[in-house]
Image (tube, rainbow, N blue to C red; front, side, top):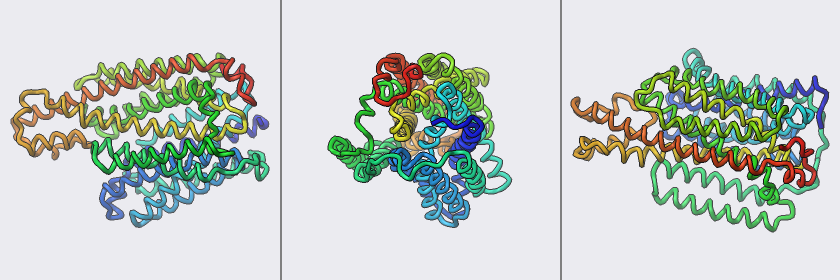
Length: 517
């Protein structure tokens, strides 16, 4: 139920702080790994689990978190999640060992999973229908701001303070958010629904999803080796067990009707997954392109990315206002079509492209990403019964996580397989000694192509090898852009076909259909 407008504004302000905080944290930890490893005397390959542990913990708990919020209340679960996020940030910031840092990141992932579905649902329920698009748009804008300033902010902290402040800064922001939510949000009953918590379903999904995500990441890094294949097999069996359980459970973790709801699943979730897939591919591929091919420094690359992330943030706000004026279909379809054009324009990039053209491509991508983001978040929450809105947000978050994983697998896999193949298309590369040929693969699988990696090659051959590696990478970049263009084009087609009044109106208890199309 909507609250008085002054309270709703305070709630929205607190939620925007949360969104900025979690996106700052997400973009900053990647840059901090080297400093963290050095200070706690850890191997970089081990400290990388600070990234993976967070994602896997999030994946294991986000759908359960959405269901808990529907049963026990959005406000309550959000406060628990933010509190856990703050506590775990303190544990990481004060940590003195790899185990403490990774354990803290597990708790941080659970905390984030607890509050993210609730914050979207709380935003939606705090405002009247005519303000839904605007409110969700501001939340999307906050996400864009967090992504835009993250690299610069973390670079400043690493340069002048310590990596620990990347986590410690979360604490005051979380406490401010908790205070505002506690004061501005009406208290809820101890239990909103009589449904039991489906612990069996939560356990099956919580084991299956991380296993499959780990397997996909391993396949992207190591190829078809026994370990990831076995993990994928076990994960797939657990998924089969999960869906079999859903058919029999009286109060399933995810009601199967959610996947039969065309406006939600085909009109919102699948297009949204195409949006998130393309976003992640662009972050990985364009980041590598700017630093390794065009030779920009990390800080310079972060500034160039502002062409996309600022556009993402600003257009998310405008896209939300557009939803309130013209409905969901126009920004939903138009945004993905522009995103598809931006992805297709990546195929025109070259190893010597001008900065102005690169910025233009990123701007097109940012416009497409921002224009439709708010519409999908709004449509998702309008296409389901009010009693399932937070669960629906949790499933949406799970879909985004799956999309990010598939995107990273595509990006890294296209470089280390197809890109590597095309790197050897030059006849000058055919007669390389075994150790040098192997080193070409090492370089292409590396995040940073430093001069040290080329030390093995004779001076007269270095230029040829660098040009061939660039050629292979550019082919992989073009392929990834083409795949993203097709995926987002398919998403636009689904949104255009399934975001319509008649189907959404048939959903029992749904928001009035005028808001759905």
